[in-house]
Each structure stands twice: as C-alpha cells, then as structure tokens.
Length: 428
Image (tube, rainbow, N blue to C red; front, side):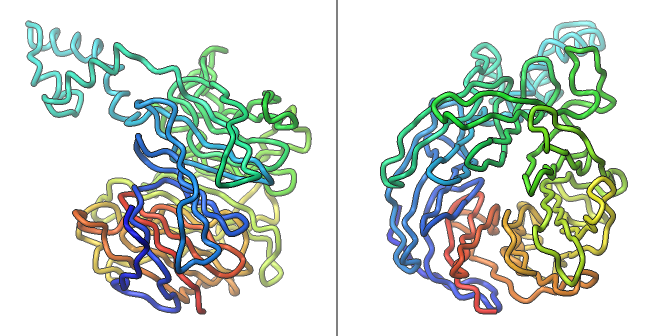
C-alpha cells in the first residue's frame, strides 16, 4: 500500500478530502471507535483494520487473509469487542455456470446431433473458451468452506479468531450483528438461494443456531417449489432495529420479520416492485428516530447491467408506521449528468447507504456517481446537500463507490469496489 495521499475529487460539494489509501477493492467498510474495518473483494486480501483516529494520517494496524485461495471475506461487522467476517466462494457467479455443464452439454448434443465442441459449450454457458478449464476445475473441486468467522477485537491491532462456523452452499454474504446475535445471510443445504440463519453469540467461541427464516418456495428439501429461476429470490441481508428485521430480498423485494421471539422469526409483510423496476432490492433499514413526525425506512436497489430506457438503481423513502405494510413516500435519483463517469463504463446507479441513523441525513454510495449526501428533513422531497465523486483507481475508467460508513465526527469512509478508500470530512 502506498502512503496516504489527498488527491482532489473530480467533483464535490460540502465534502473535503482528507486522505486516500491505495487499498485493494472492497465490499464493506465499518467504523467503530476510531477504527475502520474493511472487507476486500478478492483473495489473497481478506480484512484490513485501519486506525483512523487521525483521519489525515490513517494507518494499517492489522491484515487478515481469507481461509483459502478460493474464498473471499468481503463483508465485516463489529459489535462491542466482537468482529464477524464472512466466508463466501470467490467468483461464485462464474463457478455457478459450471453446475450447468452436464445439462447444457446434453441439450447441445441433442440439438446438434453430435457432442458439442468446447467453444460451443463456452458460448452456451456465457464464458470465454479459455475459461473452460478453470470452470471444470472448480466443478471438480467443489466448495465447502462457506460460513463466517468470529474474532475478538478488544485489541484491534491483534484480532484473535474465536470461531469458524461452516454453513452451506457458497457460504455467507452480507449480514448484521449485535453483541448477542448474528443475523447471517447464507446458503444452506436443502434451500435455494440465501436464507436467514440467526446465531446466538452468548459464547462467541461456540455460536449456536437458534432459528431460520426463508422466503416461500426456498425450502426445496421440504417440498417447496420456487416460482422463479435460479437464485433470483433470496435474502441479501437483514438489519435489526428493535424487534424487527428489515430485509432486502433481491428480486423478491423487501420483507419485515418479527423477531420478538428470536427462536421463531415471523413474516410481518413485504413490498415488491419487480417488475416493473429492474434492479434488485439490496438493503432495507428502519430509522430508529422519526423525521418530521414520520416513521421512515430507507430502501436501496443495487445497479447491475443497466438497460437503456430503464431507471438506474435508486433510493426509496418508505412509510414504516405499519411495518407489515410498507408504502413509498418518495424516491431519490442521481441523473447521468450528475457525474462525469456516468457513461465511462462500469456501474453507475445506487448500491448502499450507511447502516446507522445520522439525523435526517443519508450517505449513499452510488458506484460511478460517487458519494451522495441526501437530506430527508422533508421526507416527501429528499434533497441532495453534498456529493463527492472520487478519481478512478489507476487503470479503471470510472470510480465504483461500493460502500460507505460515517463516524460520529462526521468523517466519511468511502470504499471503492475496484481499488481505494477515501476519508472525507462532511462540512454541510
């Protein structure tokens, strides 16, 4: 890693750059007590812990590798003296194609009247011919390392592993935790796509499963039948506020789950807008404190391959006064004209916001749109009051602002999916 620098942003308003670190690209950043915990997208980089008490001179104090070369640990959460990092199959979408190899080969042979050539198989699977050997190797190797690791971070410079909990399938994606429970989004044997598995952390050296929750149709082992192809309906992750989990469920929309009895999660309601809106539901989060006398939840979609003529992924402001019957209040969008990188390549639309309440403000990562600061003081009319569009990482055509968190001093950590972490002061 190069020493921290302060390269100027391409565009900014009410945000001042403090430092930029040349770190490998990341999936999540979490700030606690003057430290930033970063999960990286690709092995051999796993988790980096930074001391940011002096945000102009941040320094790395610990690095943790993934458990093997075929896993990534790109998500991280902290609560008290505990940290959890996920373990998920790296390049999971690519290796999923290998699971279809036998079926696709048989379909091609039936249509062609002969065994397919390697290039024909590759085209049908949507991979390059040169990737077929890797695909076959992944199929032969399989994957059984998925799960999560629990760490003692009483001394953040010297994390100590307490437990490694194996789950199933491709493993754990994003999740939530507090000092007592972990709310894990993972694949499990007998289910299609990620479900919720809740673990008791009373003894963090032996996390204990206490309950599960899934969408109707996911539990194929119990005879349920999905009404969707592949893993389109699945839990992305669920965030706990009070006795309710607020869950983004990809193309199944948003769900609210009652966990007042932690051993029996119970669906309260759902809100699904697919179709006509094209992007999957990434995060749903209820604000603990009302704004302008209204109970508010935030919901954000994740931009994937954008279809011209369709809206980019955006932020929803929801009425949460009846958790079982969410209704939209307003939406917030970033136009192509709001970033010089909108058409430079890569993703442009929304991805995530800070998973904590900061008054009426939302700090949202917007891929090539950078960081957007949105004021919900009038929930019907969300208003942007700041933005920060960083320079692209070397060798990349556009920034890919992937995740964001904010510490109590107003120091913002903006993490790029490809490379780099910006520390920024909010001056709004």
